[in-house]
Image (cartoon, rainbow, N blue to C red; front, side, top):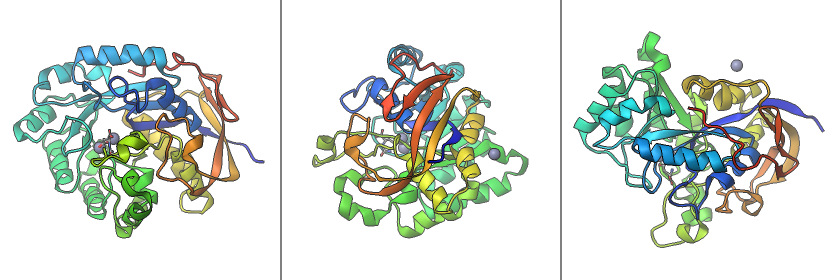
Length: 355
Ligand code: NCD
Ligand code: ZN
Ligand code: ZN
Ligand code: ZN
């Protein structure tokens, strides 16, 4: 057995559902899943119940996470039509501002152009604005970021035209191109609409799974992708099997095995894997990486992914039954053994706030 050390993953897009929907996940189970997946830090999205859109909600969330999280954590602030001024003041406490430019799970969709312009104008230039944008909204977000000279991080890019537009924008932004970053998810890299027949409601996710052409375009343009993030979005099986299933799939524990499989298959280099999951996330969100925080993987171990053996509270995976190659053996967080041989060792409260 070979043991390869890697930097721990920084997952910049997760929904740990705490507070508000802890029957789906909480900071303890979600960060246990993170560690089992080789993830040492998570950036949690604001679509909680109630949403994280002001200083008091951020303080409450920080308090809960400080007691429960086993790995390090940071939050996004959710943009609303009413929190432009307060948002800008709170920027130093968060990873970035999250704007939902389309309908997805939760109440934060912002459709008002004036409010969008006000957020892009007021948000401090040092931190990114992360957007949920699909199709035309991607073009709108890029235009707003350019007009107001702000940093823009486009979440879960899923379509051929979207990634081609982002390539074009990066080319034309010249010296400013590093202000435009984007992320893709493992489910858009490894699944398509063809999997919906097999997975049923479990495959419902925003943005929806694409065509084979979309999936291929993400791989073909991976050179301009900055980050691979899970968009870990757990919902219970009962919720997913209901007549109106909420969109979202879990992913914290399957990202690295899937990417290590791509490395084994020669579709991705080990160097690129590290850039996409650790170096670039740290650079974009201004996080320090610590030499005493790292993981050890066995790149040769082949096994089948099973929802029943995952730590996420939701207990299922859209990658059920897929054979992967590459297993997380140990995770060291600030020199402490946080995960080893299938056991999560870091206790709730060990995780620290990043911002
Ligand atoms: C996410 C969720 O469930 O919070 N769902 C999803 O389908 N991706 C919200 C989001 O990231 O859009
Ligand atoms: Zn989204
Ligand atoms: Zn999300
Ligand atoms: Zn490098």
